[in-house]
Image (cartoon, rainbow, N blue to C red; front, side):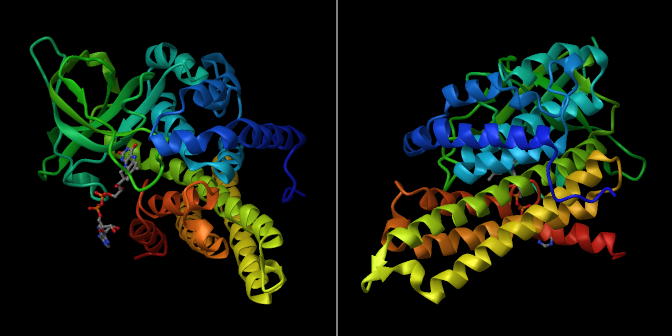
Length: 385
Ligand SMILES: Cc1cc2nc3c(=O)[nH]c(=O)nc-3n(C[C@H](O)[C@H](O)[C@H](O)COP(=O)(O)OP(=O)(O)OC[C@H]3O[C@@H](n4cnc5c(N)ncnc54)[C@H](O)[C@@H]3O)c2cc1C
């Protein structure tokens, strides 16, 4: 019998450890970082010391020898309390380090993975451009080889997570490096170390949510990196980021589930404490039914992401299940955040209440790492359209 609703003892211990960290370390501090739009270096350093950035990587590269199930468990627990730290971890692992592990040469892995796994440096993934996110074929950034064989990169990227912190070590960027016979672009992925001349990082965006995470616009003006910085084969960048995003969707689905569950946690507590008309608001069936529906959504979302993660970990096809999980979890995260704010009444609109942060943080989940429309396109394609 292999289907089992219980986590292994090891995973349950990891879950409890991160639950305690989120409660004891993140919860008391994160509101102030969020208000100041500041990156929580101290919290991220502690996450690094706990090994969270190395979770799904082998020990020989400084990792913890875990997998995407372990990563999802951790993201869910962090996002129950705060999504900025969760997305910093998600992007650092799934977008920053994973492409190097999956597609990098042995030399690239040895050079970068130990630092990325320890959280000493953060990696970023630059795919989206000002003129196109969903349509990655519209990439305008170019990379051409000069006489020495070095890559010379020109172009810009937007909305790139973890790309401008004091500890950002590299951004892997997609660029057009040629064209196929039919004229379609050949896209390749190239590692650009932070601080390379010509690589400019703009000031952080002013965002609706995820305010304690780092998101920037990047520009590349004759940025020169060695030929050895090509990630994997030339022209394979498109396939590489499709795989990267498939895996990332499992992680985002776990994060969204955490946010949805955090809305339940906060709302159940509040519904028992807050009195109106002489009794707790939770004594009203209208509120109880809202809470029951919120719990139903978080529970179903958890089943969906764990199913996708299990398929991924077992080396089975998981593209459709990852899209289903990402689509469902992000939409119900928005639903739960809306209901949690409603249950909190006016206090739900005050930033000092965690549900206000969750409300602001939920919407991006329907957009980042593939919009809801893109997930529906992927699912429909898997259905044969
Ligand atoms: C906070 C934040 C962090 C991010 N981090 C990163 C990162 O680290 N790295 C990175 O590369 N990117 C990152 N992104 C970018 C993100 O992945 C894109 O914003 C997203 O993929 C959507 O692309 P777009 O913004 O260009 O929207 P567009 O592609 O312009 O889409 C606009 C709207 O049109 C819809 N649409 C487009 N095509 C179709 C179609 N064929 N059918 C139906 N509807 C369609 C979309 O679903 C969407 O609703 C981040 C974005 C944000 C906001």
